[in-house]
Image 1: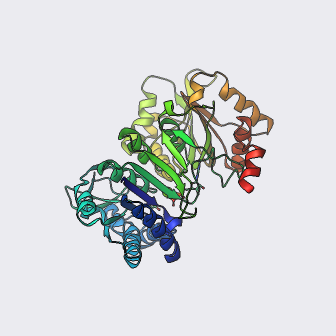
Image 2 (image 1 turned 180 degrees about the horizontal axis):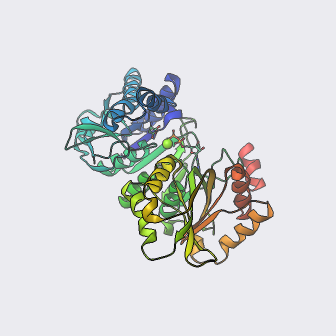
Image 3 (image 1 turned 135 degrees about the vertical axis):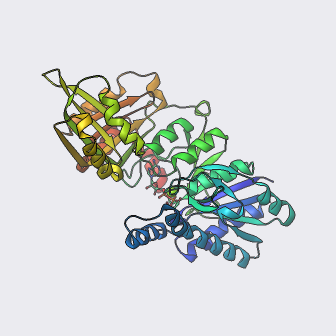
Length: 421
Ligand code: ADP
Ligand code: ASP
Ligand code: MG
């Protein structure tokens, strides 16, 4: 007997028929004698609809009420799956975040889980052999008693947190692809599926735009050593394939220099022209942005030819762009720039691989390959196991495919034949 957490994302529970299919996956594990907790997302498109309603009601709205609204999508799915499992003769009940409870901080809309007691779930397994169907994405802020949500894609994090709290043997993240690929298979159809990917690389891929797992879920899996797989709910429920295991670096035998390519469209570029070049100027620019919780990513500072002024370029999330502009304009007198230029039609493309630690010149090859395709690079950042370039959004697919091929990540023809047969 093992204790398992099974998580099903939006497309996997999009209709009642798909919820029945999910129930078959759950039944397979229960029939095999396992104790099962299921974490579900809202039905596909539901969260977007709920977010849209909040914005329609008022562009500036109370974040606590936003959470009360958007958390409701998962409540529906949890109830529906429990009903479906019961109709198949299985004992199941739904659990909302506050009922377990899953405790979070008070950062409404992007809350972090601070604690969770797995005891009530374990008691339900031990006493009644009951399946726990848990609404993902939501928790409760203990101090205020208000419902919170964990940020978009947060059900992945709920699943890993539940797995850690009940000391599960495995956490299976079921989605609409059969594992983690070398890049988004929707952009590169011949991307390769990875049997294993290290926590560090998955963390980078997720934070650099691969939305297959929420970043925080990978952090928790790494911290609590949760054995986590990404796999497909569209596989035959009687004989599903194992998917991709997220594991320690040491458990991967054949390590490539570059493991994956990620991209993020949620980027905006800001350039401040002719900023006075003296100590404290970076603090004057980035301090107010940090105070407003705006994440600044790539930063480039160029000394202009008069040596008394400098140009500074940096990126912020596209969603923070207008706010960032406003803050900089408000602080114009202290910063002292002559003009502010911005662009939102930009994308960040990143290559990730632990092998970069021991190989020189990996990024240089990319710069050459992109130049050969006529793609201009606006900004570059590098760190130990990744590098990123900021380019015009219109070249996204071309750049991703170019880098994917450059590092030998395209699926080999033999594998393609095998997959087709
Ligand atoms: P769910 O609703 O199940 O949580 P998501 O839409 O959040 O599913 O995540 C799955 C999607 O992530 C896939 O459909 C795929 O397009 C996208 N994706 C992006 N990068 C990758 C990658 N490297 N490997 C697999 N899927 C990826
Ligand atoms: N339903 C939420 C969202 O769409 C959480 C999730 O799917 O993980 O972001
Ligand atoms: Mg998701």
